[in-house]
Image 1 (cartoon, each protein chain N blue to C red):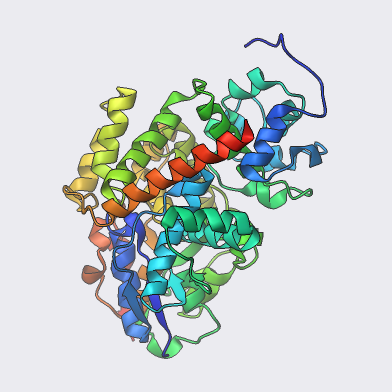
Image 2: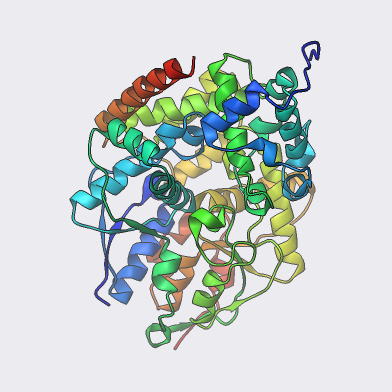
Length: 192
Length: 289
C-alpha cells in the first residue's frame, strides 16, 4: 500500500464518485462510529467502516481501494439503520466496490468479486439462479474445487439442488443486462 | 378472506428453500388466501447485482413487478427476505428519484406499473388476523426463538416492516397459534448470508453466535423467514459444531412450517425431511387437538 499521493482535501474525487454512484454524501459523517460498533464483520476488516469513510473523505484512494472492508461487507444494513446522519453506509460500500471494479483494481478479497461475476453470469444466461451452474462457475474462477463438496452432495441428495436449469426468463435477463450496460456506458460518458 | 396476491417465489424457493415454498402454499391454502405465481419471473439479482451495478439491481426486481402488474395485480408477496428487500428497495428508489425511474423504464423498454405494493408473508398472515380457530395441533412443547435476520427490517426507511431493531410480527403470529416464543437479543443480527460461498469462516462465526445464544436462553427450535438464514443455520450447523467443538442439534423451521404444523398438516407433506437437522425428535410428541 502506498500513501504517496495522500492529499487532505474537502473535495475528494472519490467522495464525489461515491455521491454520484449512490447518492450518499460521506462528508456528513462526524465519526461517531456507530457503524463500526454495530458491524458484525468489523472484527475481520482491516479498516472499520468509519475509518474507510474517513479515508474516502481524505482522498486516500489507494488505502480505500486496497482495503478488504467493502468486500467483507455482507450488506446487513445495521450501519445504515443506525447512522445518526442517515448516511447509507452499506450503499457507500457498494459504491466503492463499483468504482474499484470499474477502475480495474484487483480486489483485496478476489473470491468475493469472483462470486459476483459467477452469479451474474449465471442469472444473465439462465434467467433464474441455477445454483449448480453458479457453483461450477465460481470454482472455475477460484480454483477451490473441494470447498463445500460434501455439503453440496447432501443438498443434492435432499433434493435442494436442481440438476437442470429452467431457462425461464433467460431472454429477458439477457436483454436487461445488455440495456443496463449500454445505459451505464452513456452515463459514464457524461461524467468524463 | 378475499385478498389475492401475485406470488414471487424467487430462485431459492425453487431450490435450496423449497420447503418454504411448500409450507407457504400450504398455509395460504388452509387460510383461504389466494396466490398466483408471477408468470415468467426472473431472479431479483440479489447481492451480486447491487454490489456491482445500481441500475441492474433495480431493473431486475422491477421486471417482476411489471410482470405482476401485467397480470392485473397491485400486491406482490415475496417470502424470501432477500427478494423482499430487493423488491422493496427497487420500489423505494424509483419512487424517490424520477431520473432513476426513467433509467429503469429504459432498461426494461416498458412503462413502470403505477401502483405496486410488496409484502412479506409475515405481513399477510400477521395483519392482526386471529387464526386460533384453524389450530388443530398443539405445539406447546416448542420453545422457539424467532430469527428475523437482516433483510426483513433494514433499512427501516425502505422496508417499513415492524420495529427494525426488535421486531415482534413473527413472534405474534406464532404466539397466536399457541407456540411459545422467547425473547432474545439476536433477532436481527446478521448470519453473513452474502458471504456463504466465499468467506465461510465469517458465516460460521456469526452462525455460531446465533446458535450459542439460542441454546443459552433455552430454545429448542429457531424460526426463520429467509432461505439464506435457513441454509446457514440448518445446513451448516454441523460444520459450526465441528469448528467450535459444540453441540446444538437445534431444528430450524421456516415460520410457515410451524404454522402448517399447528394447522394440523402432516409433517411428511411439508418437506421437513429436507432439513439437515432432523425435526423428528422434537415433533414426536405432538398431540392432535
